[in-house]
Image (cartoon, rainbow, N blue to C red; front, side, top):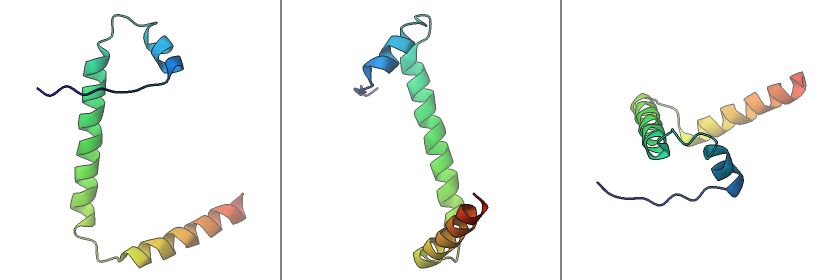
Length: 71
């Protein structure tokens, strides 16, 4: 197994210390696995897409305009 060093803010470390029974390495590992799974699924779905990057930008701008109007 490979070791990895993770930097976190002091405030977060203090909050983690309130729960000494938690193995934070396991929590981080599981979170990374979940994120990879989500990204792999996104890649699988997007690999079938016929939209171009330009299409995505255009749709994003349209959505942003509509959200701004509602707010």
